[in-house]
Structures are given as structure tokens and as C-alpha cells.
Image (cartoon, rainbow, N blue to C red):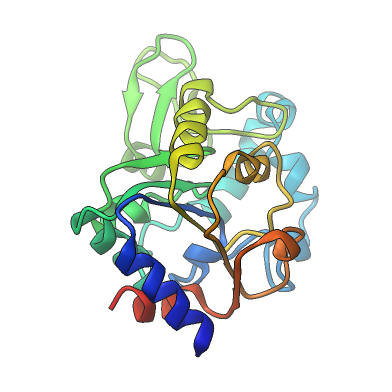
Length: 239
């Protein structure tokens, strides 16, 4: 495939690559995305997922929130796929400077990536809303219903819910990496969720690569568009 060969050449020539990815990076690990035909938004619940995953709903109906969260948001058995592993390899080789992700599953770290900016937080970090004590994922999994701290406070996952703002330090670091990148690879994201999707606007280079199963709003302004499975594309291009 000519486009993959072009990407391979750009990767070979560059030592300042940044990757920006979304849910499509983790679907090959068995984690459903939100907007595909079989994703969470097309399944039926008493409330739509966007409502359940809002700050207001979390505060008003924590039992219902955590029922959904346990069933649909935690994928503790998922393993890194070829995309995660290829990106970790690029970082190890000194070519990839950062992974910027909208995912909350921690699979990039499992694959060996070190500089991972999690725009929407992580299921693996949780804290007590009363005393601030930190808890790992195993605490959330071990407690049925609403997880409680030893002080009695409710434990909240460190994931960015609807109505909540992104962490500004993480956002600023992402902007800095993208604005300085030689090659920006965007993969597995529909580029419709803001403010995250707006990060691409900060890229100043001439090697913007979009890898996605479906078309995105930025296809027309990209320097290289590859429609396909991101794991296969990256493993070929980084091989």
C-alpha cells in the first residue's frame, strides 16, 4: 500500500513524532468505542450514556453511574494491541516524543509507553472526594455499588465526565508537543469531540497523518490519509 510506505518513510526520517489517538486505538483490544454502530451509544440503557457519564448524573445517581461504569467502562482484562506496541517501540527508538490519548484504559502504559498524556483521565486512578486519598482500580472493582473510602467519603474515578473541564497542565503539554512535532500521526479518532479534536489545529508541520477506519472532518487538510485498522497500519509502518 503506497500510503503506508510513505508513512514508513516519514517515520524513518523523523525523530520528533507525536501520536494523538482515540477510541479506535483500543477497539482492537476488545474495548468498544462510543460512536461506531456497535459502540456504547447504540446500546440501550435506562438513560443515554452521555447522561450517565455526566458530572450531574454522577452526583445525583451514583449507584446507577457505578453500575454502568463497572459494566462498560472498566476493561481490566484488555491487553495492548499492535498499535500500542508499535508506538511503544517508536518511543524506545527515540523517534516518538509523546502519546496523547483520549482513552482512559491505560493500555499505552501497559505496552511500555512512558510519555502518555491522558486527556480524559484514567480508570486506574481514583480518589476520595472527602479526604483526597488515592485508590487504584482494584479498590473500585472489589466494592459492589458505590465505592467508599476508609473515611466514608465517596471514591470518584479520575476520568473526565461530561460537564467537567480537561486538566489544563495536560492540555498545555499536549499543545506544546503537537506544535513542535515534525510528524503528527492522528489515529482511531473521529475528531468530533472537543476540545480534544481542536488540538490538531496547533500542528505547524507538513506531515499530518490521519489513520482511521472511517472518514474524518480533517481528511481534506491532512497530508496523508490511511483508511484501515490502525494496529495493522502502524505495525507495518514501524516494522
